[in-house]
Length: 310
Ligand code: OXD
Image 1 (cartoon, helix red, strand yellow):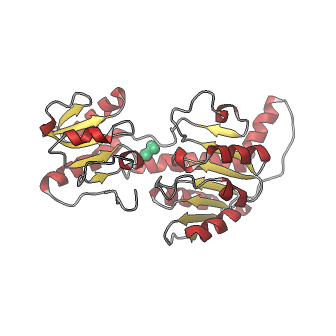
Image 2 (cartoon, protein in one colour; image 1 turned 180 degrees about the vertical axis):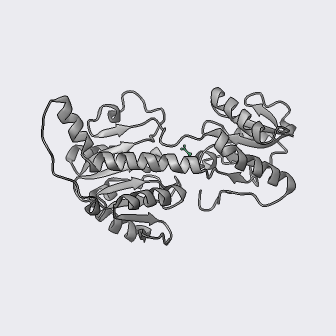
Image 3 (cartoon, protein in one colour; image 1 turned 180 degrees about the horizontal axis):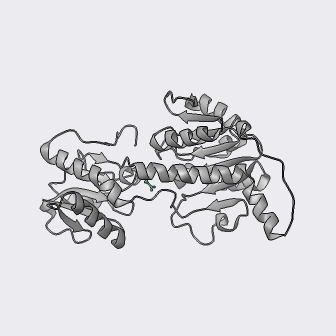
């Protein structure tokens, strides 16, 4: 039986080597060279792979996302019926996202955009000292990524709030849930960070209504998915000053077309979906573990809950 890998060619080779380092007996096939369809027992795939294509493999018993997100696997037509999907829960992914969130919270908190502009113009001007304990951060999503980021921010002394769809307690974090909770948290978020999974319920959650509830001059940070943000609404809020600046790692579509206004917006800081990049050698053990479990008919780890969408 064989494992099918599907992503960019260079990354696929890294995945092959990482999986073989954990279990040298695995047979790896790199898409599109899948070989005999009946041989494929597991597919480890990233965003570009067509889910309809996976219906070609009659003995497939496991699909694994090459990242923490699985929205690309669940969108229509979705995985072949009855085939479980696992995502990555990986310390390195979580650590990198935490660093990216900290980078941007501190960038905005410490007036870095203003100081960079002053440096460009050779202006020597001390701005008001920012007070960490007064800069409240609201995090949308308190899963692995959101909870970790919340802990890092708390460690630096920021008051941290978190919003989830269903009630959830996280130590040291003031939590909110549901539609009312979302509005209440937004009203107190000097910095709003989105780390939600993308589901039909969370698509477009950062829209004109939510942005209008933020305190004037708030900051928006999105490390989740481009589909969470209504771009026209964010651009309008940036242009009116309602939102002072935004840090964006994810877009819709990706790559972002060169003519998109974000590229040249003076109050937008962008990274090319690079906040948190899977390191195959770190992720491989859990993927191999799941392949072994699937073969033995044992319960899988990091399984996606189709009804929740993540
Ligand atoms: C992920 C990502 O889902 O990198 O892990 O976007």
